[in-house]
Length: 253
Image (cartoon, rainbow, N blue to C red; front, side):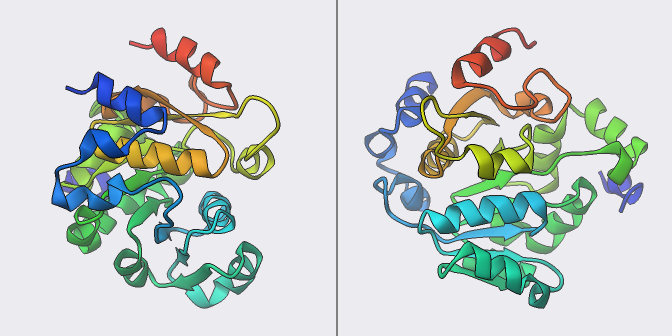
């Protein structure tokens, strides 16, 4: 794995209950995941590693929903406008500060940066009940060699789990354009679907709750192996209703 990024530098029923919003009773016994079992409406500290367009849009939605949010970057002093627009529950910090702050952490960085994040902050991230991988390997940014290597290893979901081992990982918000996040959150009528992939039941339950709180409908398409489909340019890319996502996912191998 070290060479990969040097190129760019029981369960079905429980998940069904979680995606329907009834998370609490299903996972009552594991001390580590107490935060994942909180009642709907309790606010959680959410950190974004990366505060570009996607990270900014997502963090703002969570801040507007009342969650304390910390946007992070290498130059947090440059995030003043973003923090101001996100509202009074938002702040900015370094990546180290964000990892310490967040109960839930969103990885929203160029994919080539994830290996180093795992080395620098993996232990802290593994202590969180949920890490959402929003990052995508993109050839024009990360390089063709990196993208091919990720594909050969089963796709971004499985590779992220290797690079940041031990985290309670859900892949989500990867297949939708950042502009649609702001435009379609809490839209009238049927909510926009957000496909997610993961192997950790409690992390999926928590991610699903948080997705609902910002005005979307989570749709579990499978385990992290299905995370390879949660990128632009695949059948799941773009904007879809929950029913459409279910239909598309059923046809994926």
